[in-house]
Image 1 (spheres, rainbow, N blue to C red):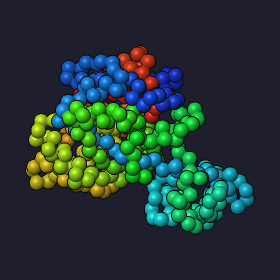
Image 2: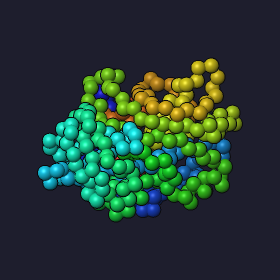
Image 3: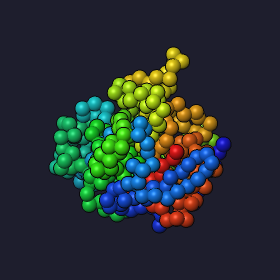
Image 4: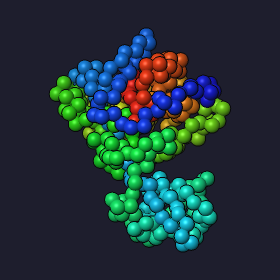
Length: 340
């Protein structure tokens, strides 16, 4: 297995620059795994494709308005992208600006001072604010969009899911962006159950694998939580013969991380809360997830490797080729795929 096995060519015109309006009007490619069969739908058709007793698992993380502008003491402009909160005042951040060494101070526009206290990898720094930055988010924070999106986002809420709650992500769990409150109500009325997990998405999620052998790639670590209520619904769904449908690779990683904690030989899931660095590659045996709703992922990323593990590499690349020919929109604001 080589990283190049997960590469494909995507025309730049296939990268979605704006979200679909309304949310559930995006296209939905339905991929039946065995034998491989593809059908073309609209996302709101999901209520026709899921069954009573299926369980839909959603990641309710909320994106931090983490893109912040500041000035150095010399007056030079600095851009901060907050990644992870260490404590009330201290954050790991990507910095844009020269000379940001340990001891250098910056002042956030209309906000507090901050000091560089440690150099991390590359352009990452550990920054300590003079007071909590979170109370300033409403007036100084900007939602960070992926670098391949060049259009201005007029409504920042379009980069949040309608069910987002737990603030902590540097990027949105984009498979969930297609849901509307009305579609969720329609699914509930059909008998589909809804459960929630939380995984705070880091920017490393989207980074390409640079090693020739993907097994040598150091996977990012992200914090996740599966509450007992969700564990109970998963166990009940399995007993009743329903399917656990994970919305997004973040939900997949949370569910399968929880499954790794099962050591007593049973199949029952229990509550789970911890950092996870699970790296799902072809050959992985899924323990909880029966179906996945996901967007179309970047070449050579850990995410396309994860869906390849679920579908099969050749099958997923074939489906991606069909999507490109059929004019599907790719990446964060793009269309969706339901894998059954």
